[in-house]
Image (tube, rainbow, N blue to C red):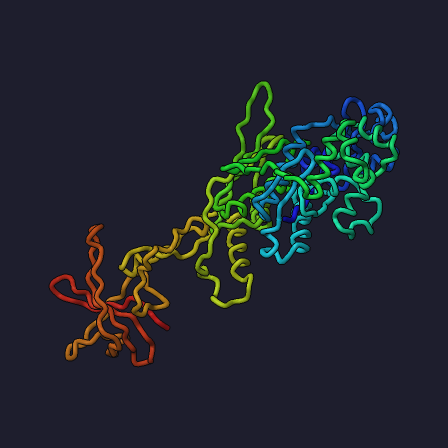
Length: 502
């Protein structure tokens, strides 16, 4: 087994900053801020720390050091939501995910081959975590979950110790930090310090019987699980069956374009959820909740995003959502957003679309789909259309233009026969005169040469518009190829021109 542990050492503060909007606390011009619990500073941002604010300092002292300091009360619900969003984001790498109060564990032994090995998978997981809004992050890898978690939480004594074998890395960890990471009693550290233990290696060299009598059984059990000498079961994280995720903003947004920063905190978990479920998003809804007053309650603004070609790529979804938000006018400031997945399709191997040539360079089809979805998001879904096949043998009804985001799928039985079809089909068939002697159709006063056998098409009895025709490929005197038919209905049959091959 191979476990990756991601420890969010900046979770109390980032849980608040993740809900910021563009141009507020999440931007580069942010005010100094800190998180307070029981009137004591728990964590401070870089600007506040540079001004002298440290963990454990009283909130009053911190406020006196920095003018305009923004103080947040520690919120366990926000922290849990931040961890869950990260778990959903990282679900694209493995279904074996474990949520912890301050981090996430991933069992990636079965995923290494899919991502090119452990090292590329390591860098990909770190990049996804950063894209999800996690900046303060420590990672570690180990064969057991307990070992990976403690290695990520406890700072090693030296960078060189990271290259040692697992048992040596664990033995070198400071005892106090390991006990804090495992949530064991502080008095145990005082007891062990009294007998000269400073590291986990010192504890392992002591007799087990004596440690158990002195109340260190929980520590011995944690050491056994970390070294793989005892079972190490973990509660798996179960993603929701239906994706719907909300976010309460840190500051109100007066412009829809300001919501892009916060919306990305929902798009990244959606992409991870889609990958874990092996689905692709076809229709999304972003609900913007407005501030209300005592006199007037405003209804939510609903931004719908329909995709012509379903996708689960976060970059593509974010690009389309940004286009829609830039075109949205807010009737009132927004204080919360909610993203829900309305429609999804199975993301399996599919035929190449009309605009991608088989064997073309990788990415050309992806670029075309991205372009069409972006145009539809910017101009409106009804203004970007594409041809779609219809299960009808009548040539004029076998294809219709449909919005690119709502075009019907190709029928399972392709209605287009193997007989040749012209590149250009006339909107209305043109009547052709007939040669009196030979009965051949005339085009521009000259008889046509029929170059194919008759292809009979009879259809339309089901909707009252019956056609009965014999189609031929014909060549004109100027060597142009035409598609003509002879009408078989009525007392007198006539010739018509219906298409041009080139």
